[in-house]
Image 1 (cartoon, rainbow, N blue to C red):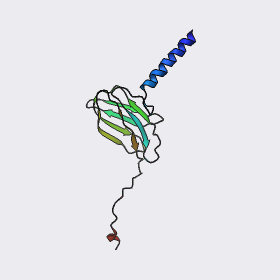
Image 2 (cartoon, rainbow, N blue to C red):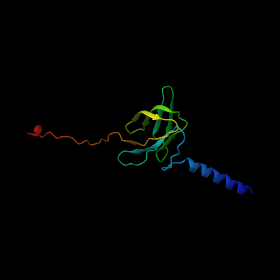
Image 3 (cartoon, helix red, strand yellow):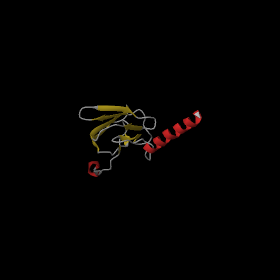
Image 4 (cartoon, rainbow, N blue to C red):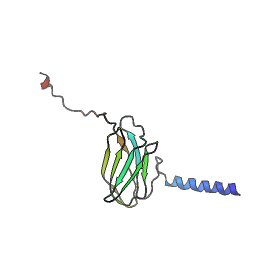
Length: 130
C-alpha cells in the first residue's frame, strides 16, 4: 500500500511539473522572466552568469545553471532593467523589459567574450592608398 501511494505521489508531482513547462524545458509561471544565456560565437550555454532584475526600488539576482538557464518567478507586472554579467564577457543590459498581466517573457541572451569583436561591413576608401 505504501509503495502504491508513493507511486501515485510521484506521478502527480511529475504531471504538475510537466504542466508548468514550456517547449524548451524552462519552467514558466505567472509574471516571470526566463531564458537561456549563450556565447555569441560558439552558441554554447554559459553557466554562472549573474542575472540581475532591477525595479525602481528592488533588485533580484540569480546565477545561470549549467545549461545557461535562468528563471525569475513571482515578478509583478511592470517595467524592469535586466543585467547579465560574467567575468571575461561584455556586460549585456536590457532596458525597459515589460511584463504585462499574466504574460511571462522569454529573454534569450548572447554574450560576447572580452577581446572578441564583430566585423561590421563598411566602405573601404581606396583614395588613402594612392
